[in-house]
Length: 423
Image (cartoon, rainbow, N blue to C red; front, side):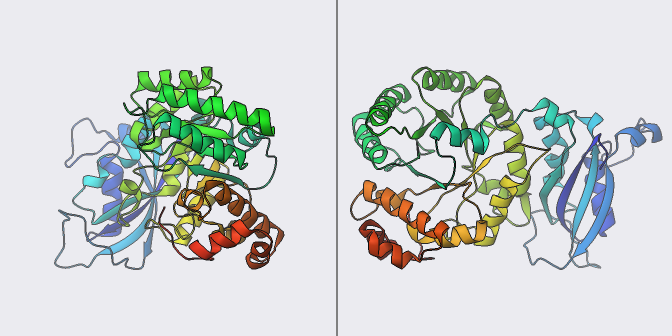
């Protein structure tokens, strides 16, 4: 890859010759259009036209065709991994303009029966333009005074509907139980029944009291997702009150808004992936999580949701593990982001999660797995902590449960290791 270009990797499915389909993508996304035009000179193409680097034919996927696909009577559908280079002169180190090039109109091309952006190789100018995570794994650990071990957290449940004074009781119990991290649900923004300002006042007061009693202060991620002016004001409100984290739903504000916030932000940004399924779920269309996560990290997400093993959503364990690996893989020499595991997480999943990720640089969020514990949220925290302690020490869960009744109760209710549970 040249220092002055971006290389995009795609899964392409088409009834055309593969090389012809690849050239159609390169042309549509750079200098070409549906017909030759007078000013598309050889000199202009030499400087600005996207270049097809490779076309690697793959076995048939069996994916359905996209609506409106141009079919051929003479040829069957073929699949390929296609790599295309886009000169940085076409758009500069700019996330929105990068996306216009590598993921703009190509999803509408009739020539393609399937098109998915799999990965992006980015040149150094993007690192110069976007500083990326301000805290990442190490900074988050320092704020929490948790230098090692998995970080355990939860989501406020019920997701919406709790008035601030009931939220106070939830936060108090979780903080007393020794949890590391609590967050608003992505559905909880700044609603009339529980305004952000009221939540911030109640939560920070309770966290301060817990710190005075126990010596530990959990991190609370307040959901500040909103229009730009309000999002900045929301951040300032949390920061002024002594809050230590803000949450942003990346897809709902966009990468540019996340980068804009990062420039003004004094706190870790907890990046929620709500609505990512729009890009990732259909195998023949969209943007793969690997590519998506690179853009979110560049834009400044300190934490990034990856889903968890045996989750309640559509992703397989293999897909989740690939997402975790993507977030943990260095990008442009850095961009350290903390993977966040969530969705149906319970104590019984700890050993398999640790075995397959081989790391404790994870933030594991259990919503129903903590709040749904038979003896209440405090026991839920105890059970999760005991399960992860057992997992990292190599102690069988059954042996640990014999010593920790809360863990035994959790295993009785949620199962081990792959019994699914709805949050």
